[in-house]
Image 1: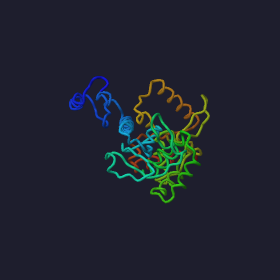
Image 2: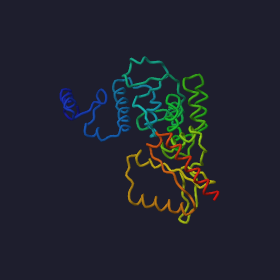
Image 3: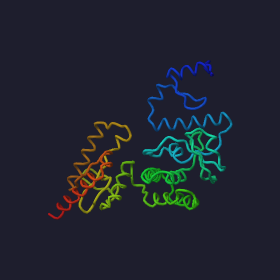
Image 4: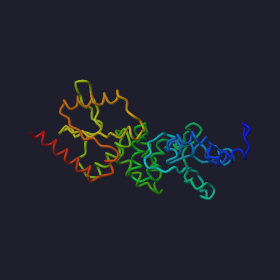
Length: 295
């Protein structure tokens, strides 16, 4: 409007596909929208929702659950783009658009923080709320990244105890009982979950091994038989192409570890969803490593 466009002009731009309507009064150039990842689009929709509700005087509530997780830049895996709001009073679902989910709860002052201009639940409360509503694997991905980002485990357990009687508390307890700050990517979290689910011998995470060119960390390691499992899906997950220097350093690292007697299993995202085949690969590699040790 400030640039001289009328409502009719805007409608014509939307109809022609040059503008994308995010929410009432909120638009974005279609060319820029198309370049965004699905996560970035979901986060823009949260900002659009905030802008629209403040503009109409209905901007109350705290963004929570997966919406707060997006604001805290937590890893999200297979999570929808619904907008979650927590408010002290129970508001009918008809009072918001279909993509908004309302949650009734009284938040303590420490449970609310500002991220930019968004009032969102604290990192700890966000992890707990996500663990309550998401399937175990998705909740674990968020919880482990939260711990890695410095979330207080004590505060998360305190939140769980304060939510006794609310839906999903048992699920949140299970997530927190298994969560660790050692996983450095969603792929590593899901790899740990796979090993645990398949009842395989559990390795050590992030083991530091001294070599001739310094100490190197292994994603997962069966230390006594010098077998390492490395998850190679980071670049794929983050849409990032490794440079020749990165590849050179990785080869240099692996050669140094092999000189120390280590062997490797390398897995990618697709391997995590072919569990029978992956279990056989891991068991075969463990058997070979045990045979080498005994020889």
